[in-house]
Picture (cartoon, rainbow, N blue to C red):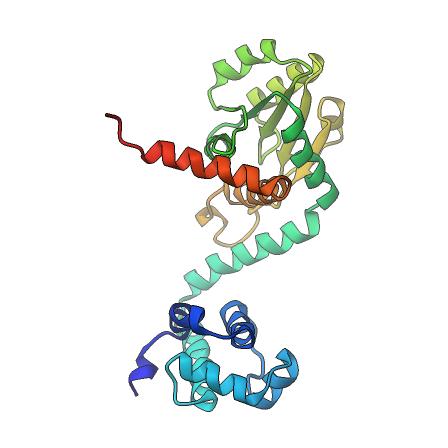
Length: 273
């Protein structure tokens, strides 16, 4: 009975290193699965192309007497978790799921590839935003700065307007505005475009006029018009997009960029003498 008091996924996690490659395949399925599927031994051998012996070894290494006990407890915990979850919690999680589904539909991977390339090409990157978008801009600065990118986050109205003067063809300007009508962000994009900088707007509301001063308009999902929408962090769609761009960028010259990131972290931890 002792095993039945434990959460299954953490048990799989802590034992993961001792699994064989075939057992890790089983572990990966249960760690990532969020669907109501048949987890009988017969079905899992067919789905994962593993033997029943592999399922049995996996279950025993995870702390169970065998796969039958593991499968029973796995299904019981999933049913219990869903049945005891409050409507409020379900509502919030449903919105995140909805936003990610929308992100799949909106994402233009070729566009993301272009943006990742721009970050490598331009001498200076400026990302601007206000409020929640400003928080996302500062997060982007922090992440890319750690891998050697010359990037500045601008979140104040006055700085956006003043810095516009210094933008030129060597600059990439990224404006973050979920609403698409943040006056100071649009002002900076228009001025930077006029000065021949490359300009990108990230927004949830598309308008034809954006193409007049933006080289790229990146669309992200909106959490508006959803139940519990006011409970969701407004910068969430921006951070998801940022993670995708960052990952794409890191794929090229991965070793060099990882080394830069590691060295930056070491420098931050080093105690001044």
